[in-house]
Image 1 (tube, rainbow, N blue to C red):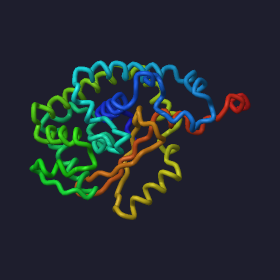
Image 2 (cartoon, helix red, strand yellow; image 1 turned 45 degrees about the horizontal axis):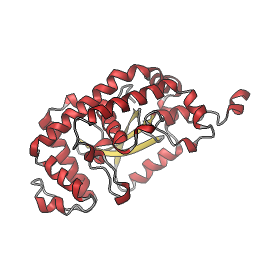
Image 3 (cartoon, helix red, strand yellow; image 1 turned 60 degrees about the vertical axis):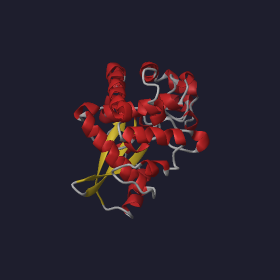
Length: 267
């Protein structure tokens, strides 16, 4: 597991957060507080450095989002309509460390290729020409989303270029604030250790996926905004299927900790 921040993925995670959660939650840690025996106040008290980081990047991210009014639709999860965000397939993919490693045309090609594969895996027919009727048949998304998908895949009004610039700015926000959490990242790598994070549940998930896919290897990384202990996706490399496992920073920090103040005092 490489000790690095995946700025591209983190930019997408940040965008997803601010497009689906209100400002009142900007200082919340990316976890399900109810899962832990400690109160929210107790957890927050011990993670003020992280709270400052999340609050800062979300606040600054909202300012950037205001400059790209149409971009929000890419990351919006319309819960009432049970439709996923358009770029969900990209957010949890194995990407280069930063979007700077892609040209605008490279990223455009990646989005088109991955979008086709994702839609085909869900049973939709989609050609590389992205005909209007094909996009209109993607009833997984609402009408507003389908219209923006068509604009993105044909780069109408430079929609793809705008998305690139937006992600680039979101990456920079994270880079400007990362000094607040570097010690926490070190804690995961130096004290917890990647091998301690591989649980029976994760191994079971990998085994389950292996029933339908021949997984030759699994890469592990850390997502500083992922709200769960781990997530897993698959990718192809040299025509071989590999796993991409990402651990959530805060859930990892809290995993195995005493569940109450009284328990802590006994240690």
